[in-house]
Image 1 (cartoon, protein in one colour):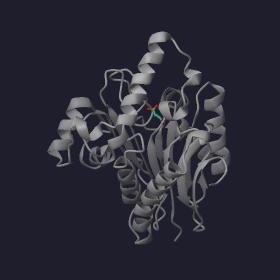
Image 2 (image 1 turned 180 degrees about the vertical axis):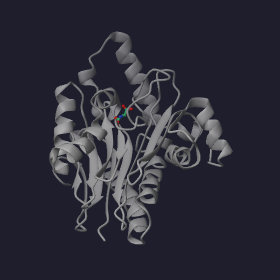
Image 3 (image 1 turned 90 degrees about the vertical axis):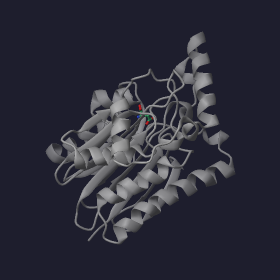
Image 4 (image 1 turned 135 degrees about the vertical axis):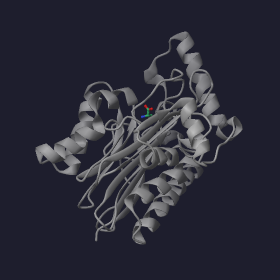
Length: 310
Ligand code: ASP
């Protein structure tokens, strides 16, 4: 049976001119590690759900990416993490938002999906539920990365003087991690995790935990998005791609390209990773780069940051 896996580390990359060779190597190593974590599971006939969970956990634990350990700060200097997971065969889904202490939000999203009667859980009660579920908790120090703190100070300063958003580098605005997989039994799954947007309002909820916006999986395809969340919510990007396949007879690539084009025409930007039940993979994005890696149904492996393959 065909297996396939794609992961992303966010559409907010460092500008190419600012990416040192060491940084590039560190990002590629992080992507490769996450891809390998998921791939090993798929190769051993594990489930797509396990593959996307473990790939995302590796990215959440890596401070380079905006999720888990490397989550960005909101305008009050706090982190509020979000995550979602969805299982294609039965469209079971779980998502969490507003987490401050749970080390791996994607694990909590999965517990919500598998052990509660609900789909979405948020804020203090969600962190409490993580404790009750035995998931590791971390204090604020664990989540405090100097680079994200500096990004918040710069953003607050920009907002105070009314500076243009167009001048803010994309790595300051975006970031999220995600994975989509097809397993040996033909099952699709998607997972996404994020710190959201730097200097977001406390309580702001983005696209990642909104099922159908930043995350979706059914029997046709699995999708995980990254980019300006409000636009992903307004255009229901992840579900739109699945609907184009289901009702429109689009190929995965056409469907994903169109969804990103619509989002961009509306004033948003970002990208998605998507896999269909044939093991085809599409990874369009409208930003300068998107950290990404994949192995498609033919076993071809790729890792890249910008539009050309590095
Ligand atoms: N989509 C995320 C959000 O808006 C951030 C990102 O992927 O850049 O919360």
